[in-house]
Image (cartoon, rainbow, N blue to C red; front, side, top):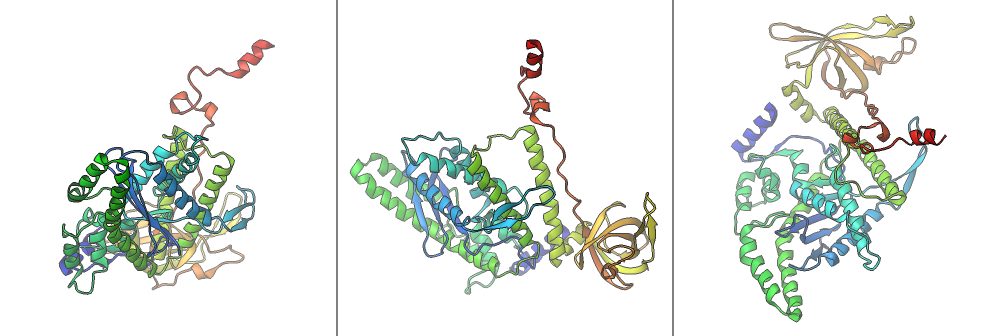
Length: 494
């Protein structure tokens, strides 16, 4: 936690009111997201108890699994709802022209977005996806294929949550935590009821802290899932489960109906809070970089649909070494890009980075805009420099590329750092965005006296080259140790 975050949390605790940590919304918010609440049974991690989902606040769909027996009917109904929602995102496409790396292709104009209460629900959906996508498809059981396809989509959505900036499957507590900070601990922020009470307290509450204390009342508090409250389990669920086990087949339908009514009442407060949170987030202005990230989300979704139509094999339970390395490289690049774009868009984020040394702000004190260097071929290159005086900590090395939110296309290379008594002098060279010597772009040139805030720029990303499978050792996912080279057989036959 940074110094600024600690200060804001202490201020929230002292005043009893939430503090803003972001001026803009940095994740895309769909006009019609799929809200999904889940409860799981004790026992197998992937066995569902109930799911409440829908795209309208006043028309939720409730699916309840029987305490014992097959969950296939409930999973089939869940698969139907989720895949129908996903299919509605595939109604329209747009043409993407060919690039140097990819041929011309089509991309869907929308992508699915599922909002869940907390990260624990994401893990539950991941466990459910791991269980379902490897199930055998039985032609005698029509529901088996949609259920397997549901497992594929749940795995895809859960994997997307590992990518910073992705908005395919979003826990609401994390979404709210990006924009507000409370006076309670980060562990307490994982409870949607108390977090939302801090952010948007009811009119009768004197402060967010008092509203959070009321929300913690054990007589009225309801867990957002997927685990239920222990008192609720012992006092209300257990008697119904026992009655279901002892009842005859004719009475089991009545008990299951009572269970549905009980779970609907249990989930309804969380359902209402999810839409309350959605309204708060929708009211925030969207950051500039959000559209680019959503475009990438649509591209990934389109590629996944193409994979399903072409091959459709489930993702393996564990990535091989090369696949894991590729995924790690993509995740790290996404994290760096997301951090850089948030800093460029949001002054609150830049202020926090200045306290950690990942950004600095200062006044331009000297300029050298006539500077020209010659490359190896003798070609003249315009490389203007300027000096910036700052009192912020500068924890960077010369050579680091910097960016400025005022001039997004420009790049500044940190050349020299001089520490004085009270200030630090930083010499920077403009390396991109200023045009050429014969046609310069003077808009990127700062004037003496200008105040600039510079943040780290993400490096140009290029996926490392990994060996092909046949050239990968068997210990890292390549051919088995006893794999024979077919070329030797060909030679012996000759």
